[in-house]
Image 1 (cartoon, rainbow, N blue to C red):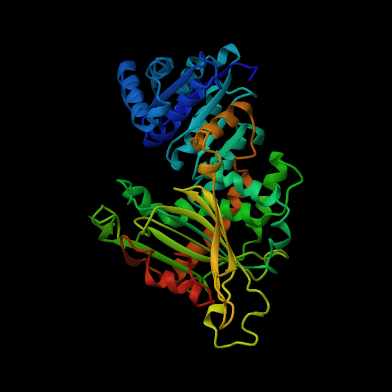
Image 2 (cartoon, one colour):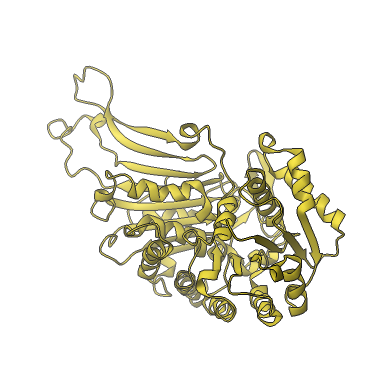
Length: 489
């Protein structure tokens, strides 16, 4: 990075800053990927002294940086380089103060990161416009969600357009910064063996699961209004769908990749009032047990009866590659285990020669091939194939499904597993937009999601209870079974 950089973090006293953003900045500084004199301005409405915020930052680093990567001297130097400014980022005069503190008036490349509630975006962007401090080189990153529905996303994007050009805007979905999510691109487009089979002629179904064991963690107000549909499916799940289903881009240029992703999202078949009951399930966690410990219900955690913490959807993509192949998507709080994975089930072999002359041999049954891409907590790829069991086969050949397991953690044991935000922040500083979401992607996703929400409202659908520690409501289990499929548990 030849031009001097500065970083302004709005929402610096929040949980995301403590868990992810500040530790990521520490790692980039420790490895020399950012200049040691880069101004880092942390801001929030909370009244804190410089010493108080430095201690908060130091506590966050000691808690969230793995011990083998924690250097007390580097941490202390980093903390001393962070300046806390108590300010209201929705006010133009305060925004101008932040810009000066970041030395933007000295020609620094200013990078704003808005880690704030979505209802503050338009106000902060208005303050940026009115402050006169924003230059043609300034960049802004916005944490998801971009709005809470289609109309509000239009409002946020219009407010962005009044201040910035599209190449200055970095809409964050941190899943795109995950190593294993990027490995989807390598798996698909760096291996010739998969592409000929990557279509509806060979693939029977695709499942994407994002399971969380945590509850709402004190965010009842947020989850009451957003729910799993808007909090998780609109961004994380649909981004995974896009990466799995998109056509091969010509190269890794941001425009090439994002052009193909938005085509997928626009091809999603609308789910409205006429089929929302058949293709979607929403749920809310009740009391139960996680890892052998009793946990409370969503209502006991302060949530409203009408809010949903789980959603499952049967999605279909209306294009030549995927017509007829369902994509089953599910995500929820307080599920049986923390797991993010993609399961691709291939179609059965067209004829089972091993039972052709021996129908009494149950051991000759064929199971479909499957590809499982594990994103978290383990990272790896498993390919399930049929193999012959050892033996003399006097009653016919016996077959068994076996897995070829590639652990990315083992294969790259010498590499540090980076926080997704490290890559995203570095790309922000370098102006690389491939792993960020474009305006038309956001709006296409919200348009599809709003159709589901409107269908729920029209049908008066309410969340179904499910026990914490389960895989959601029983109706979610029945969802794929209505179409001849089953969830991979």
